[in-house]
Length: 364
Image (cartoon, rainbow, N blue to C red; front, side):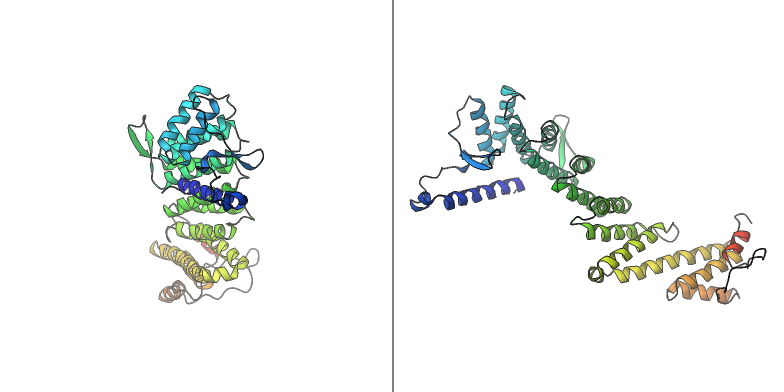
């Protein structure tokens, strides 16, 4: 069952309860004075109250739209859509209740899974009547459409002859919510939804960027801890292996440390210390693999530098132990860091960074 259908039914139950609670006479006489259908009541945004409506008069501007609204309340979405489209054709965009008609049309189309029509209608309402009482509800409808697209639901194309998946349209709708409605309650959630979508699809680099953006644009938001943790996890997941650049590992390490400092208890629950150890090991492997490359290409000094750097920077890891073994095999022993930098004019030792840059030149 759709969430709009549920929300309508829930609203109707709340309204019925309010009517009973607010009318002693109605409660005492069994409620015989209450209206038979609560959809004969209409919320007046001007006063913030529910107002009982006279029975709709077919053939009139208000009556025809009220009939469409009643069909929507009864979840007869096809009838509601037919009625409201006929109303728009008959009374046009200058009618006072035109924004309401757009909302009814968009919602009926959404419930009928005509996502393209629903999106176009909601967008028209939000663009042309941004201050309308129906704008927030239209924005919620837009978010529902984006969720359907990202979940793989299909939209109608070519006048309904073909239905196609439209993931990109779902992303565009979320971007529009964030860009054009940044102060709405949905903006932060829309950005989180977009980042989550990329993460679940395995597009970790895009996910990392969106989680970082979520933390920047909503630094005091309800998802700030979540965004920081997820951005670190995405950066770690995006690391393709020791043969590639380890900038993502460095970024992940920094964000995990920030998370650990700000939220120590959450960090323990999320096994952040274990993840930091894994990052250390991965960075140690990266440096060890560089040393192995130089050894295979017979650049002994460069290999020695990176083996010794692995031992110094990543002690306690498997890769530090393996680097020690390679140094011993090469007859170079272990590295003791120098007490000071070489004086000006003194030739750098071959295992220092300066020595490597001087000797390990491609094509040497």
